Image (cartoon, rainbow, N blue to C red; front, side, top):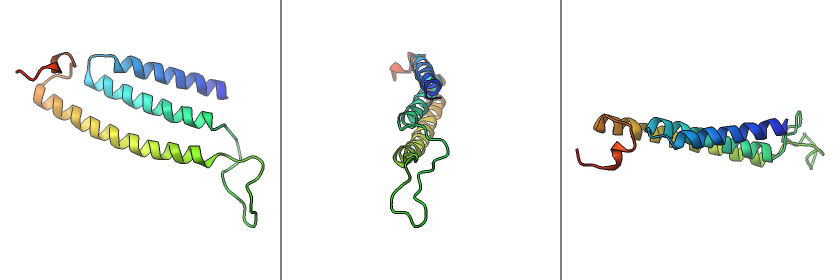
Length: 115
């Protein structure tokens, strides 16, 4: 399962980089979102997959059981998802406003402000 997820992370990174090298702002935004999700999945996979072992300590126990999921990676991913969504929404608003002002989303045409 870990190998499959590692391959998926690689594919997501490759697709994200490919989209970021395109000339339109929308594809740049989609590439940024893909790379963010690939990074989150990479953190999740690197923490190790433990099926059926929650990151909880049972009632009356003082130490976690032998196998348990790492809660740090899950907390990092949850924080990254929230921050990534905020950045994505802000960038989407910037792209929309840029398109309204310039009537184009081509990055080569946006290099100059002379219109």
